Length: 124
Image (cartoon, rainbow, N blue to C red; front, side, top):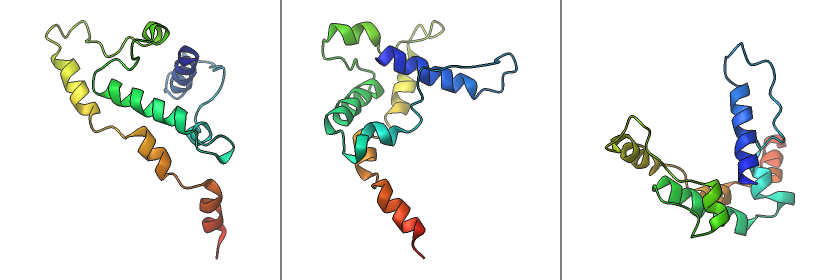
């Protein structure tokens, strides 16, 4: 699932580039609305968002998020230095920058229900 997800997000990102040689992009699905993932049918998907948040937090800290799960470890290699960074200076800088990334769980829990937002917007 993760490989398919990343492929689809990559395809959507490629479609947004100002590249004239790209004529068409056909992702398997579009995940541009993360609210629907976190609140399927309006109910908070606590297990999914908690796991997603924990994995994201570990990746942002430069750690493997898999907890020794061999399937996960096949799909996610973790942060790696680029070839031109033998001392891993750029890798350490990137990990330090990622420390300021949003907490996925907190962001989704702070998201108000859409019906409330729409009702407020429609009120005179």
